[in-house]
Every structure is written in C-alpha cells, then in structure tokens.
Image (cartoon, rainbow, N blue to C red):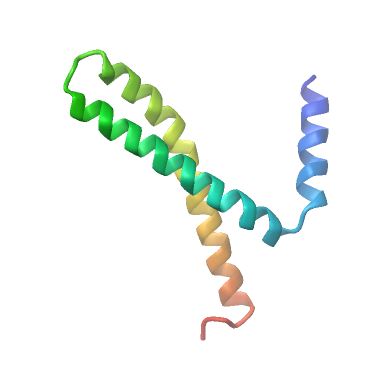
Length: 87
C-alpha cells in the first residue's frame, strides 16, 4: 500500500506543471486555513472548557497548512525573481 501511494503521489506531482499545481492548490489551502482559523477563534470566543481540546486538534491541522501556504508563496516569489517580473 505504501509503495503504491508513493508511486501515485510521484506520478501526480510529475504530471502537472509547477504553475498549475500552485495555481490550484494555493487558493484551496488559503480557503481551508481561513476556515480553520475562523473556527478556532469561534471556539476560543465561546469560553467553555471543552473547546480548548478541539482548538488543539485544529492547530494540528492548521500548522501543516500554514507551512504549505508559506512554501507556495516563497516558490511563487522566487519564480517572479527568476523570470525578471520583479527588478
């Protein structure tokens, strides 16, 4: 199972261009991060003791998404520098 997932992931990543992947994944990641952050703030504002545990679970989901978003922004910025769009 693990080798098939790895082969599937590799073939998916190699079959799409960088621009197409960041152009579609970027907005999806941004929307998911914003929704999770809003949910986290709503749980924090509720003030009950049980939502604290749910917020911790949300942070586990938010952290990798923020990392992916940051990586996409950095790669896009590097592309702009490489192709001369930013002097």
